[in-house]
Image (cartoon, rainbow, N blue to C red; front, side):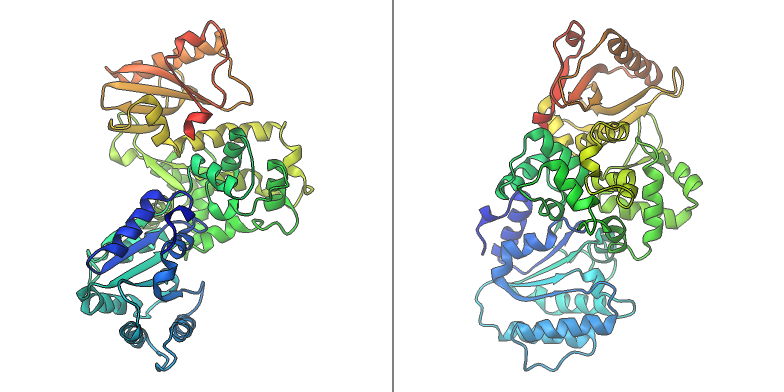
Length: 473
C-alpha cells in the first residue's frame, strides 16, 4: 500500500480508502467528481499496489468497444486462459474466475474506472454488476470493489440511489472536490513552483483547485506567463477544455452549457423561473440539468432570507468555467501574451472582483473558522434589495443559529483596502436596508473579506470583523 504522505491533501478521502481496505468485510466504494479532479490518481496512488483488476471505460465507445477493452485488461491481469467475454454476464464471470485464481492474500481490490462510459445503452452492465456484487463479492470478506466516474449525477442516480438490486449496496462513497487554497500552495511547492499567497489565489481564480490544470504549470514561468501558455497560446493544452469538460460529463451537454452560460450573465445567480425564461429549458429537462451541474460542483443552489423553496437561486461557482466564459473568446484574436498584457484592463478588474467572491464561497469552512463558528449551524446566501434601493447587493450573508448575521463585503485588491467616508456610508446603508427589509431580530455585523486587510483610517473601527486572504489558507 502507498505511503499515506505521498498524496497531497485528500486527508478524509484517504482515510476512507484505508479503512475500507483494512476492514473485516467486503467493501463497495463509489468515487465520483468532475473531470480532472484527481479521482483515478487518488485511488491508484493509495491502493494501486493492491489491485487484482483494473479497467476503465472508453469515452464514446459502444458496447463492443467497452467489452474489448475489458477483455484486454482481464488478459493483462493474468486471465489469458479465459475465453474473451461477449457480454457483461461473461465479463463478470471472468472477473470472478480471475479473483479465485489470484494468489494474493488479504483484501483484493477491483477498480472499475469511468463506469458511466462502460455502461453503454442496453448493454446490461448495471444488472451484471449488481449480480456480481450481490451474489458473490458481498458474501466474501476479502473484496474491495471501487467504482469511479466523472459524471457524478450518473453515479448518484444509477448506483448510490439505485432503487433496484444495487439499492444500499455501496458501503462508502467519496465525492472528490477541488483542492483548497492551502492544498494548492502545498501542491505548487511539491512541484518546485514558489508563489506568494496572492498569486496562488489568482491562479485559483483562473483554474480553480483542479490538480490536472495545476500540473501544467512550469516553474520557470511567471503566473501570467503560465496562464498564457496553458490557455491562450497557440496549441495551448487547455484551449478546448471548456467544451470537452461538459461533453465528457454529460450525454446532452448542450443543455448544461446553455444553463452555465445563462447563469454567468448574473453574478449572484438566477431563480429557476428566470433560467427557464432566458434559456428556453423547462420541466424535467431543466430539473435534471441543474441537478447534474450541482452534483459536479459547477453550480450551487441557495435559499435567500425569507424565500420559499420554489424560489431557490442557482449560482455559477466554478472559477475555471467563469474564466473561460469571460476570456475564452480572446484565445483566437490575441497574441500569446494576452494575459500578461491584460492586468490593468477594466475587464481583468471586473473578473477579479467576482472570481475572488467565488474563492470565498469555496472556502466557507475557513471563513467559519476565523469567525469562530465552525460548530454553529449557518445558512449562506447572497442578498439584494427589492424595496429601498434595488441596486443594493450584499455579496455573502452568513445567517447563524447563534442569532448573529454577518454581512460580508468582499474586496479584491493588490494593497490594503481603504474605507473612505463615502464607502462607510454605503456599508451603513446596506446594513440598514437589510435589517429593514428582512425584519430580522438578530444582531447584524458588517464583515470585510479582503486580500491584504484594511488600511488604517478613522472608518476602520466601524468594522467588527475583518478576514484576509491568508485566513483562507
